[in-house]
Length: 221
Image 1: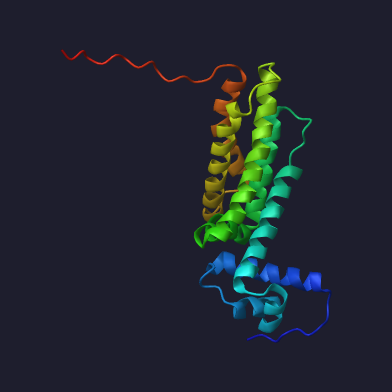
Image 2: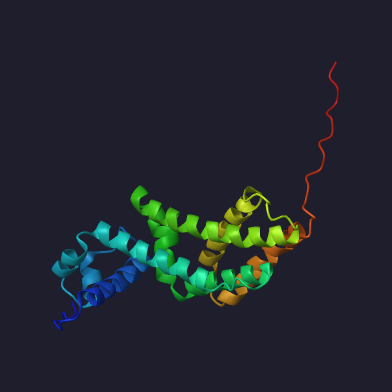
């Protein structure tokens, strides 16, 4: 086991150091397999100090989820310039999402895989993050749709399902991109943009796809 650092530093800095180590261990080994000994060693502190600061493994994991969820939401929001056309806003939002998840693969593993499979309290934290991103994407699509249709009162419900589907696709694609060598954040964003905007573009232009009319079945006497 490595030597424990004894140099004093502000509590907030030390706590972030512990969270950095915890995200790496949880992301790479999984919640159940991760040990507080490993986390303390990687952070360069004693295990009792980790417990003193963050109480328990469960509280430490929750703190990791909250920090990384907040960072992802902020990255997506900061990546979008609201003065651009709707397609450019969506492109920049997707680019920010895939760039952040690519640059922070352990954090994405914590959010996308670990938190969702180890109990309701953890899953609820991720659900709150996801709802915030879906709401943000809904507003992006809604603004474009209202402008395209010249209808400032277009109901949010008209595009809410599209935002939900788009975020779900982005989550799955980010997991695939992180596990597939050679796939860049730019390529992942372009893949989803090509897939999504082909449909959204027609929708904005007032050309929605419609299912075929049902044919009457044979009459049974």
